Structures are given as C-alpha cells and as structure tokens.
Length: 165
Image 1 (cartoon, rainbow, N blue to C red):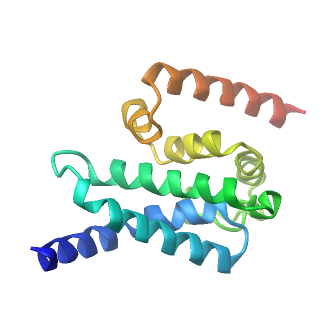
Image 2: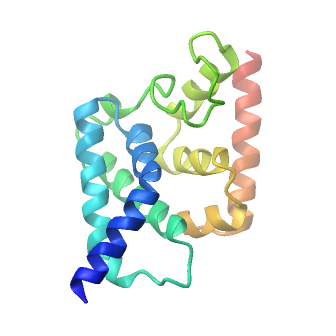
Image 3: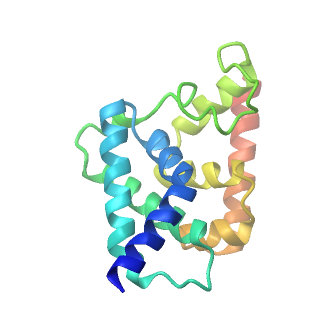
C-alpha cells in the first residue's frame, strides 16, 4: 500500500510540479532559497498526502499546501525583505511565452506590483493570473468567494492607481 501511495504521489507531483516552482519563485529571491522552499513544499505535500481526498482537485489541494508552506517560510525568515522577488526574473510562466519582461513595460509593472504585495495578496494574484475560478481561489486560500472577489477588485483598483502615476 505504501509503495502504491508513493508511486501515485510521485506521478501527481511530477504532473503538477509547475505549481511548486511558481510558488517558490514567487516567495523567494535567491535560487538556493527557492530550491529549499520547493523541497520543503514537496516534503509537506508528502506528509499531508495520506489526507488527500481523491474526489477533490489535486492542483487545488497542492496550491493550498504550497502557499501555506511559502507563507510560513516568509513568517519564519528573519530576512523577509530579501525574499521579496522582483517577479520580472521569475514568473515568466504567467506571461505569454514570447513576451520579454525587459521590453514589456506593462508586464514589468505588473511583476513589480505583485512582488510588493503581502503574502495573501501575492497568492491571490498568482492564482488569479493562472485563470483559477473565484471558487478555486477561495478553496486554496481558505476564504469566501465574496472575499476573493472583493480582494481582486481592490487589487485591480490599486494597480490602476499605481500604473497611472
């Protein structure tokens, strides 16, 4: 049974490894820290895997754990500011593949805006830019769908204000 669970977990982790990498990139500035965080996320996913309900979306469950681990990592790190990533360098997956963040001013501004957010809003924006539904974002973050909609609306207003100045 343990070998079957290990095999299933390994396959699911490989299929959805982009989630782990995106979260690590969003929460850590240095490659070594990203690797450590990605490893910690994988470890926590394995520890929690026995409680995973196969009736539910694996990616939603994975995002929830990955984001919780990343947020805890930030809280437990004395150098919190060093871990705020200039997302220009690392979240290129969110952008169109052919886009060059150096020459795409709106994308550069968006990445800078995201990197300046607190952990919850950063997670919310990461999921929103992944085209996740309000329901899925709510499930991942443990907040209501109305709260998701309100927070997204407020973040959009702040973005408009930041980008227009």
